[in-house]
Length: 107
Image (cartoon, rainbow, N blue to C red; front, top):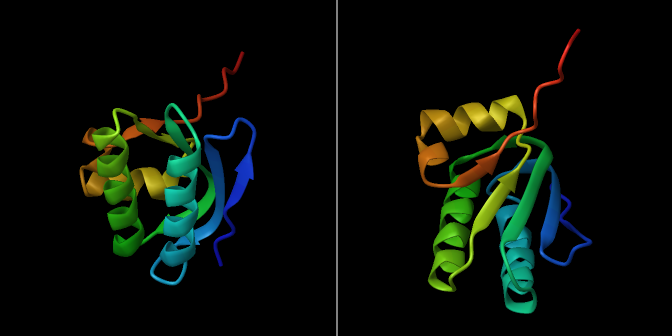
């Protein structure tokens, strides 16, 4: 089950688990509340999200559109490799603003 939590600053939401048909209702409500009560970009931390299904992708696209209409931006932070792959396969990485975790520098 996905567990949305707020963090400081007030425009960041951390998600864990799987963003799917069972969890999008709660996440949608949390995102809408975040958009309504914060300013600036809306940041969704996906570092602990294991997978996203079509319903979850639809929620991200809808949130992207809503933030754009308000002159803001949806930023997806540090998605796991499986999530990066689904964004690439669906070509949503071209539409959504994704900030990947930097690779560690090895000596």
